[in-house]
Length: 519
Image 1 (cartoon, rainbow, N blue to C red):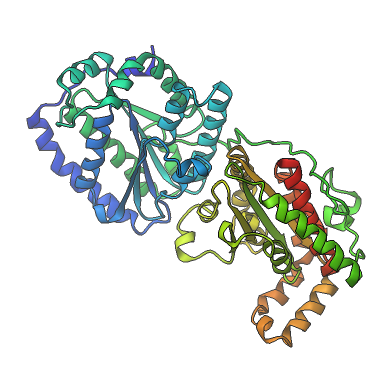
Image 2 (cartoon, rainbow, N blue to C red):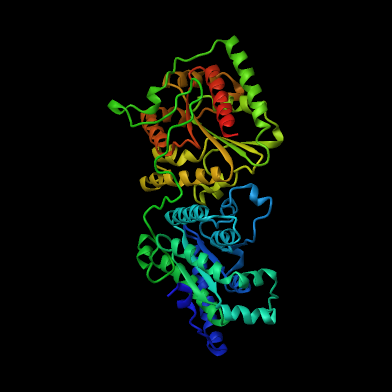
């Protein structure tokens, strides 16, 4: 028996019973929502279904029953041409509720997967990739302590037909060609829906399928499902909430990494730049220990090679067109020359089509979301470029070493990052990541030089000097980072940067070589 046949209960609720229950249910929802405001986790309700008008009714109802001031909602349809220039999941990330708030996403990632497959825009492999991204996203949110409720409002085929004849839903919504298309594709779509729901239930948050034939039964079922899930977390307010998964629509699984490559391959190797691959060397040597920091360029050779590589980049940048985007990420030691390398790239790019995003400690708003949220906001559309001065790898570097992330959080971040980068690549992005490496003596020399330059002195803080005490710990973290996330489509390029001139040319050459290979 399918989950939809099982859900077609035909249950109905009398007006008398409905009206007697609603006041208590609303009060309980408001009290739970008020308690949520002081918590470090959000409530996310995914509202989907083949009853399109019913979803609209329920969205309005939740705004009526809950405090709309602290409830964010987003309803999605077919992606617009502008949205299709970004990775598909970017539009979902932008509307995720912050900690302490409730949010509703209507017709989100599950419906999009079904629509794209039924209409032929996704083949079976593409659907499996999409499901992998769904599972990974939901696991990220769960691991970040979110309460998630997933509701599918289902109408039997006969009820669809009856409403189409009337051209109106129970609440008076006028049905249109979209509702007729749902009816015409009902059997085919239902097979895909069941596949998607089963694959995103087995190892993730379970779906609750609700018979929407009777609107009062539907409304009370939704209200109770949301209340039960939130109340269970508030009452336990800890990891014990997951033990209540059999009672409420909150689920858990051990780190799903579907869609990510667990065995990333070697990097593309530009001339004179060392790639990272293979096991850690003897005596605990890291990939950074293998770099030749004596590499340098005389001033005349630097000027010639810099001009040649910038000319290459100018030509290659024009070939991005409207189907590809460029994402460059820069990591490395303080004073390693990330800003200087970035400026040599942007000098020859059209300023209308690129952004440089400096990443510092997260703002208060950013701390209220998953750690990848702030990076999804800056992903470029097709035809554009974004250069990140420090990146999404902060979770496995500074947050790991300084204790801002728990061991569980930074360890699972590798899989989260692999999925993030996989989505960028699938959407047409060209991704390249740099680590600029210097030795402690060179860093100290640059720190002291900065003190005498007014427009650079502000960069120095006591933390810069304090972090030098953890140099080897950072090297080991960088080694783990490279080995866990190296893949041909989004390679790491490790650049010896004791000589700034050599490093700048090496970075430019790597960008040009990777662009040329990708285009």
